[in-house]
Length: 381
Image (cartoon, rainbow, N blue to C red; front, top):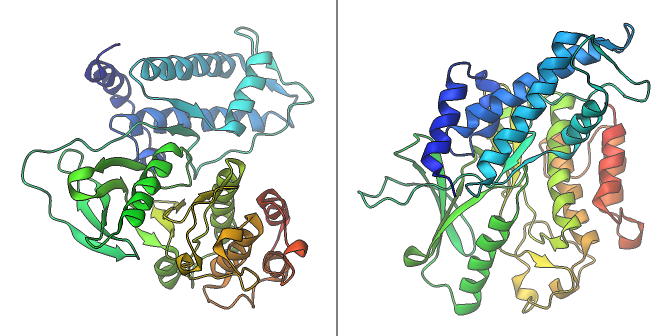
């Protein structure tokens, strides 16, 4: 296996000369340096070429020769970077929608004379605000020096969350510390939360880094706000389009969980987190202490129903199903669009979605998150 330091040094040398803008590099700060500048640069260059290609759709559908060669080279460059990182155990995936575009482009791009854009090729939906490269690529290094100064930022039933600044890379990291009075079952659940977060690899889910057995804690990606604090600060200035984009990010995270057979079971405004960048916000779903695989019998009793959003139709947490997560989703969506705890008062198109999510008859609710996403994508102010 190649040496990680050598691979990183090579990438740093290659991409530091022409770094991306801060907005693009900022989308990848959860990755270990120098990967933020690598994937920020690749993302920014892809978007520039995609934007140029879109401009050609109504002007003869002819993609110029120079840009054709640039995109061919960029696709190969992405393949090479992924390959180099794969050899040192870092798995990089291109988000599905962008990978599909790259696959389609590879089928018609030619190196000389320009590339005719097929009639079946639609305009590209260009994403400037969310990562299009997903990775398992970062863990804070283990330190033997004086522990960093930690600031408490939150507390839950089983744990306290602190923030500290990593001394090597200079950016904040969160550490979740289990409370000292955890019983054996609660400790098992705390460890299971870390393991599940470590397995999940998705842009809108908080990334877990490292478990420390000696302190019953684990490090994870730091986020600037929970949803309640975020809305308290920004509710008066958020446009409908921004609220919709954040709501979709949240739904994409829930859809990812449900497709993997995972029920969250503890949704609240306190565990939908927000990362703030220079020109963008990013949703990060967290707190998987009560997660359960569909069909699992891990739940002990009704006393574990601790979430702040309770489904009144649910008599026992053991009976929890996707429709019960969807009930909580309705409350979260209403809060995103109004900044209030009440599920009333949303714009009409949003209110219809919320009402269906929280219907008193679970059989009349959305039965799958994909249905909620489809309706929200069509919603207008």
